[in-house]
Length: 232
Image 1 (spheres, helix red, strand yellow):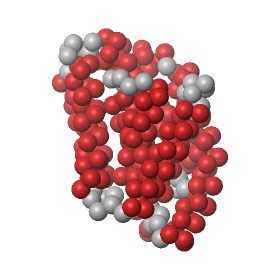
Image 2 (spheres, rainbow, N blue to C red; image 1 turned 135 degrees about the vertical axis):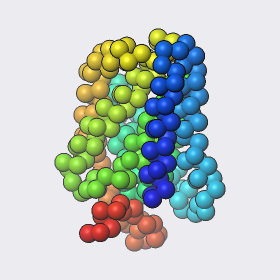
Image 3 (cartoon, rainbow, N blue to C red; image 1 turned 90 degrees about the vertical axis):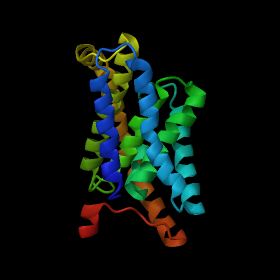
Image 4 (cartoon, rainbow, N blue to C red; image 1 turned 30 degrees about the horizontal axis):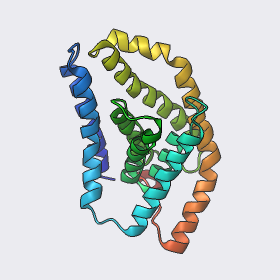
């Protein structure tokens, strides 16, 4: 996790730098999509180069499958899905790298059902970041207040990232004025998504805590603890 924090910050610094460099340029659409995809690569490379146990790989596959299934099952209900909550719980209980990979893979794999496109890298980056940052939030495993707050903020964050995609691909470049317009227009969708994230976190966290504690006792899985939890 000590290496995950600067990696996450570097990813988003590069993302903001790209928006600055390509502000108003017609080539921004293609470059931004390519960069979003490239920004996920360090996490996959760390996973590939690390010593990953078969148990970790199976757990990651199981969590990703649950997230994909959740998105597909709730397809009739736009913006009301358990994906962000499941990804966040993966990061909270098993670490930032686990959460990021689960989020990015969920977007990539579920879009074989919903349709691949230039929006996929943005979804990979957004859901991956939600899973990664959940590992840094104290109290997310136990406090309903923290869970609700993180759910709402993750909904706003996801909408903000996806509206970058909307702006760039609709306008042929990034315009702050148009971006704010799209953000405002998406408020009803953002509110629905934020509320659903908080609701699913409240509903799923107690059961997930029992499951992870059982996995820890029976199979030796190490439950992730952030810095504050380690001190207490």
